Image 1 (cartoon, rainbow, N blue to C red):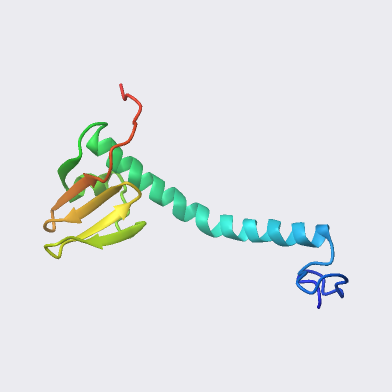
Image 2: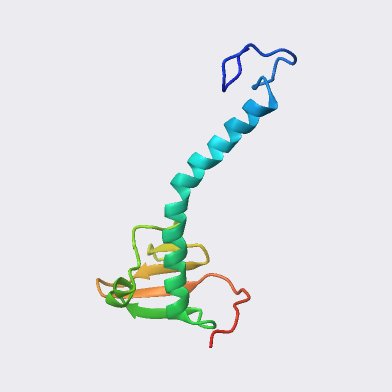
Length: 123
């Protein structure tokens, strides 16, 4: 077998992938860096969308209907979400972590908090 990083012959166990600790570390550092470069910008958008919904909902509300332009004004990005689900009426919920939103019409959006959690007091 050859090392995944430097292509040197590997001595020892048959299932070894790297010839040394240095090659193993280099491989995993590079892997984490590539993942971070791809995931970080996306994660920032998702966190921003969640923060916008939290700001609109406040610390205690579990459901609120807002006008789409209010979200647009705060730069909410509708195409970014963590997952979606369809309720028993066939309506689609777009989830961003513990919040979800559903379009009622072109102008109205319902935001729902999925589960209760501790939120620090906002003054």
